[in-house]
Amino acid sequence: MALVYPHPIPARGQSTEVGPGLHWIRLPLPYALDHINIYALDDGEGWAVVDTGSRTDEVTATWRELFANQQDQRPMTRVFVTHMHPDHVGMAGWLTRKFGVPLWMTRLEYLHCRVMVGDTGRAAPPEATAFYHRAGWSEAAIEAYQARFGNFGQHIHALPEHFTRLQDGQRLRIGAHEWQVIIGAGHSPEHACLYCPELRRLISGDQVLPRISSNVSVYPIEPGADPMSDWLASIDKLRRLVPDDVLVLPSHNEPFTGLHERLDALARGQEEALQRLREWLGAAPRRVVDTFPALFSREITEAKSALLGMATGEAQACLNHLLARGEAQFTLDADGVAWWRGP
Image (cartoon, rainbow, N blue to C red; front, side, top):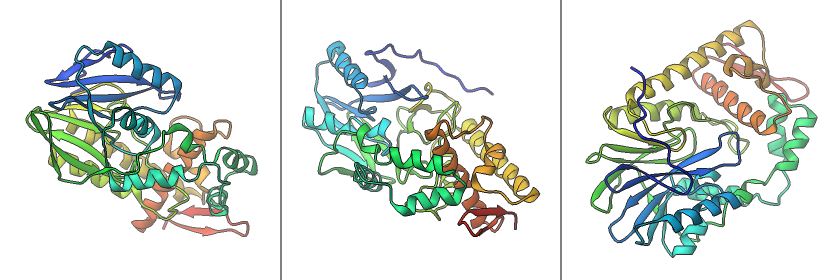
């Protein structure tokens, strides 16, 4: 059965109601993925928002259009952020200061964001360049990485100095309804989804997307991590805790029904990619950059440095996952480049 998309996309500066006291808003993004969905929830005395958009002039202008078009003039009450990527947290500091409201976020996401912002203006550390050299990057690609290192903070307004912690299993009263926090991982350290059994609505963030799969990557800060295990476990967790009849409110694409079908497809697609990778490693030793044809349908080139970084991180995540399962191994050559092979 195909997924069903029951609601029209809201116009810029407007919202679409997707449940009682629950509104879908779309903000522009300056990336290949050109939008993010955020959600406004009736919080009794005002409106709570989930996610905020990247820090850009266009997003700021869109927020101002939303304020001007708002028919219900109750104030903002609080800001929830699903995770620390700039398209989700970028405007959180601006909104919390503008309205004098608290930020709600998981601890790992808040602290990890503060660490990343701390790299602003800093030179890329040797350990980071060694990570990409080990993956098989050319000197030109590494120089491009060094030139853009520390740009993360440019997409984020300074976070407030304190936050209210979201925790797995926590139950929150938002207006007239109770919402449950469900924590996932893999795409980010401690990603918060919000599930309301009464409304049969799941705000899924990037943990479940209907038409694209979320990037699951290893980064230089933790080169031996296995986020793919976390990602697959989170798929199983959502299938177990959330029934199939919910309306899923994702961060990208459109709200949809068919949660379990989508979770099954995500898990199946990842296992198929891992099987292709096993076969690829069985044919000959490979560097991380050599595994791209086995994992991705489009060509990955150094000309698009951001895409190269995401592909490298996800390929490394797949390799680390096979390593943890005893299904792959690697050796370093004399130049410090890792060559991967089957067991």
